[in-house]
Length: 197
Image 1 (tube, one colour):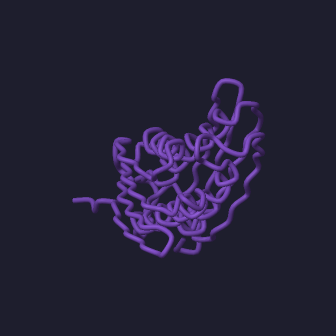
Image 2: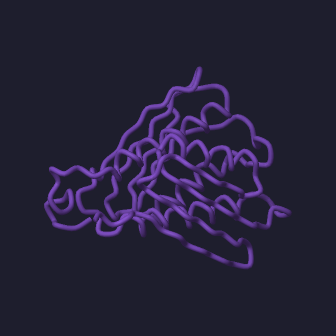
């Protein structure tokens, strides 16, 4: 029987209390409560379009702003992805997705390499969407990538509507992650000539 690729991590600091439960072989089921409505919606989209079951519960210092809540959530989701992947045997390792959202087009490419890196190319024309600070999109993906051990490239190719562009990035991330973590029976061991990733 194949081992389940799931993980649960709880992280508490003076700024946030976070619980994340993930199933990489899920159906896109989600239960998200970060206290930031727009951020909840983006994580729901990431889960649904990535076919990854995701539960996230966050109590953060939102009286300050959304920074700690969003960044720390990225940290814990990244840690959960890394933990759930286990030995990484037979995974595709690479994933790329282009997602159109009305007038916008976004791309996310990743390599589950064990080498954390982020290239982010996207500019937003408003400071906030609801209570979510748009500058935190990049910080979320940086925190996730560096704690998951992923080389991540995320870019808004073009677009005008800030909601559409950010939504496209989260959907594209989910789809690229789904491709990268999927197993291929033709891959014996890990997808690396070094024998480890």
